Image (cartoon, rainbow, N blue to C red):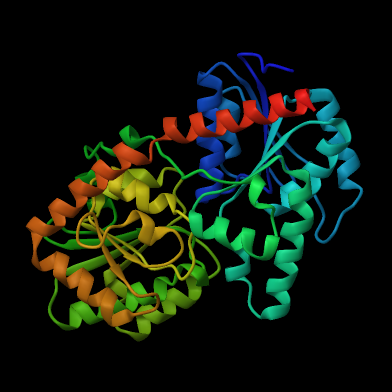
Length: 383
C-alpha cells in the first residue's frame, strides 16, 4: 500500500481565477496548502484571471492554457504534457469543465482527482434539454473523479439523483473562510465617506457578481419600497457583471439612483463589509455562498433567500432572517424588521459570526480536503 508523503504536490484546476466565490476558495486552499508544507500550483483552462497575481505573489505557479470556445479535445494532450512536467500527487478540480478535461489527462497518467462542484448546474439550466445535458456531462465527467465533493447537501442530492454520480464517490465538504480577515472595522468610516455615504445613513449591502441569478433587482426594489416609507437607507453593491446596465436603469426608473452605490469590482471586497449595517443575499440559486459566511465573519446581520444549502446554514431568527425565493415583500419585511430593531440586528450578527467560527473555518475545510487527497492517493496505491 502506498502511504502519502507528509508534503504533497497539489494541482488545482479551474476555468480561470477571475473574481468569484469558487475562485476565492481555490485561492484560500492553495495558500493554506503552502502553509501546511505542500507544493501547490494552479492550472486554468482559459485565462489566469484577476486573482492569479495573489497566488503568484505567494510563490504559487499559475498556468493558463488559453482554451478556445467550444469543445477542444486536443486540450487534453496539452494538459497531459503539463502534468508530466509538474508531476502532482493529486489534482483538485473545481466545476465540471476542468474535471472533464484535466480528469481525462490525469486518468492517462494514473493521478488521483478530487473534484468539487460549487453550484447545482442542473437547477441553474433552463429547460429540460439543457438540464439533461448537464446531468449527462456530470455522469461522464464523474468517471474521472476519485471523490466527487459538493459544497452543500442539496448539490450532492442533485448530482446523486438517478445515479448520475455514484453515491460511493460523493462527499459534502462545506465551504470555509479565514474569519480573522473580516473583523477589522478601522477603515469603515473613511470608506463610507469616499463612497458618498453620510454618517447617519443606514447601509444595506451585498457582494457578488451582477448577474441575473443573483437577483439584485429584488434588492433595488426593496430599497425603493423602504425609502418610500421614509427609511433613511442606502444600497451598496460590491461587484460588476452583465446586469450592471439593467440594474442602473432599474434604480433610475424607481427614482432611487442616487441612493444606490454601484462600487464595481473590488479586489478586496471584505474591506467594504464594515461599511454596511445589514447584508442581503437575494440569489435564486446558491450552494453555500462565501458572501454569506464573509458577512457573518464581519459581524453583519444577514437577510437571505431560502435557496440551495442556505436553509441548512441560516437558522431563521437565530443567526439570520430568511425569505422565500423571489418574495420581494418578504425581503422588504425582513430588512425593515432589522432596521427597526438594532438589538435584534446586533444579536443576529453576533450569532452569525459564532456560526462561522464554530463550523465554517478555512482550517476545517482545508483539513477535510487534505484527508480526501490522502485517501485517494492511498487507494490508488493499494489498487
